[in-house]
Length: 346
Ligand code: SAM
Ligand code: FES
Image 1 (cartoon, rainbow, N blue to C red):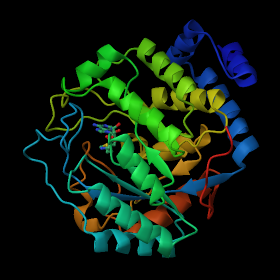
Image 2 (image 1 turned 120 degrees about the vertical axis):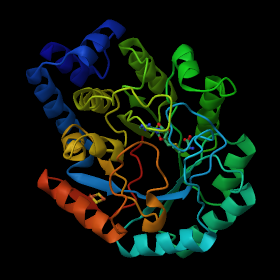
Image 3 (image 1 turned 90 degrees about the vertical axis):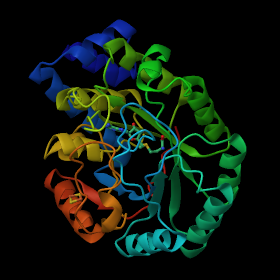
């Protein structure tokens, strides 16, 4: 298996069968070698820098009913909230003083956040903080909506494709949700000049190794600037409540593979990874990750953005989270960068 890692390291690609064997290989020696090579590549392009993205969870209302998600429309127990313009701006003010230079506005698909509202808030943030990047993660919208928000100053967009396989997509989503629409959104975002992030959950119910290989192939075609992966974690108010969470080792293997296949990509050590293991994010950083996304949402709403059970960082003030993450990042030999952290030319 070490030869496969070596081949991936030197050529950036493997055949489908080789990828499959590496994804399924759970021996410790290979895992350590993969980590070493992934770290070598991340250091080549990004040194020991870790970029921060301040996550502002603007709404827990969602018109979609994705089967895995705690804030799905059908979850009658979900607590709904949406942040006001003033609340969002106050998160940015707080974040700016803590050294954040990227603000990510994420939420369920909530029609309250019209193009007009979004364009207003985006241009306000960009005027106040011209040295900051604005990232959006608001799900599927029309090309025109993406265009208006880009013109208002948005720089980046995160939209996980969730799975590149039609059959699996149908098992995870109600019939009104269509994989091709999501893929079209991603291509539209790229065409409009956004830096685009996509990704998927690892260990989501019914996922096979072949599905993961398809995800890697789809991303080779899309060429995203950022790839967000994390373990699936069940939510007790969804149909998937009795499924196990994705495995730490598998997530780490895929992170290592991603860093070797997409050497310059921005790769976050996600909150979900930190939720399944107390050192999940640290292990992610050691396996090629170079981004963390601390929560900047007001503490009063944090528990309500309840995507999966036992989500971490829901009780801490933003400053505490920032400090905690800095210690974690330093403990594994990396440093927080104060830069905007744009992606390198692909
Ligand atoms: N509405 C936007 C969208 O669809 O892209 C952004 C919000 S959505 C909740 C953000 C991401 O959360 C999804 O892309 C999904 O991968 C992840 N997510 C949802 N439920 C999850 C779960 N049970 N475990 C882990 N991740 C989950
Ligand atoms: Fe939020 Fe540690 S990152 S408390």
